[in-house]
Image (cartoon, rainbow, N blue to C red; front, side):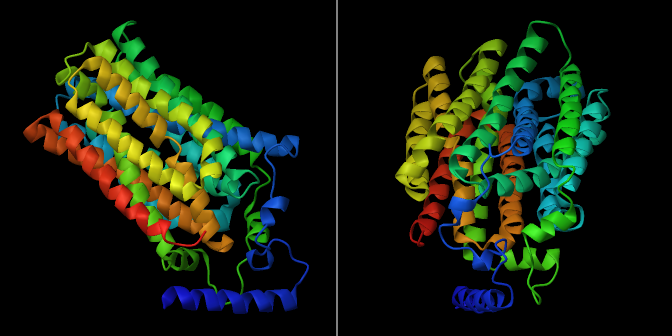
Amino acid sequence: MEVANSHQERDIEREEAHSSNPATPNEEETAPPHAVNIATRWNESKTTIWKVTATFWCMFVMGANDAAYGAIIPYLELYYRKSYTIISLVFLAPFAGYTVSAVLSNSIHQHFGRRGVAIIAAGFHLLAFAIISVHPPFPVLVVMFLLIGFASGIQNAAWNVWVGNMANSNEVLGFLHGFYGVGATSSPLIATTLITKAGWEWFDFYYLMAGAAVIEFVYAVSAFWNETSSKYKQENPVSPGRGGALSQTRLALTYQVTWTCAIFLFLYGGVEVAIGGWIVVFMTNVRHGSAFASGMTETGFWLGITVGRFVLGFVSPRLGEKLAIAMYLIFSIALELIFWLVPEFIVSALAVSFVGFFMGTIFPCVVVVATRLLPKHIHVAAIGFTAALSMGGGSVFPFMIGAVAQAKGVKVLQPILLAMLAVALAIWAVLLRLPQ
């Protein structure tokens, strides 16, 4: 009944908007179903290309940060002399940041525009990486990861919505998340090599991250400098009676699609980061690999994600995003079974790489599905909420696995991941029944 009432209200608003201002193309109520034909193209101008490539670099930095956890966790244990459970706080800490970003993302857009997103997110990244590079006390380290979570959360929402409303959004989103994968692939490779081969300490790696954040700040802020709050409000008008930014967030949470996608991505983010975060420990302790070979396994996983995002981004629209995601999940479950049941290092390394390949494009596909099923005026609020929960899952589940691994051993990783994938597939079946 709630969904039906929402549709009726949008029909009434569409008629009112058309009669009062029929020449306004920006309002989602007046846009025809085939509005993709007039959507922004990524290469329509040099300015747009500059903005798009800036978002690519931001995602590269995000991916490099997220994937570095897995490579440095063994060294954090030694340096701080903490247990699995305590060290796992580096996964859990960003969850608070992601949660705050889910609430404030739409407000930041309304008050500061995309320029504000670029300044706040890149600035927090730079601050946090600089402090981590001087190896602060463990409580300070946890707080810095919280700041990183907030920064990544608001960026993730902003750039996914902006790119998701472009023409050929599936392909461009595939590249956006592909660059996240490039960062996630190169980060553990560089960190593992520098620590094991060049004699660097774990915190020295964050000098490189701070340098990347400097580029991120200059690149993103200059690209989105003219994207002010007034321009954002013109592009995303709010009709009288809809309330402010927080009201839009509350409205987004009344849609079943928002919650279904959010819970699904909560599990998806948990699986992705849990594999990336604990695979080195698993391959070292359970598959008895060397430190370098185990580190390369994590690189293989993120490489699989990267290639999958670049390649399957062109396949998914032809299959239909809903069906494609279901197929990718089934393939991932089959490969996880091989990973778990065949106790060979090489087989496990190959299996986890292919898990990454099929899981890689799921996130951008979900963004495309959500933007098609939800009204435009709540895209930032809804995608911000779902993206934050995805990143929250990437914090909560690796922490939980670390706590269980402390008691039962890291061998529990595989059955937990299989259960999470199976539940995610069941949740996605709910969206399969909804109209396109």
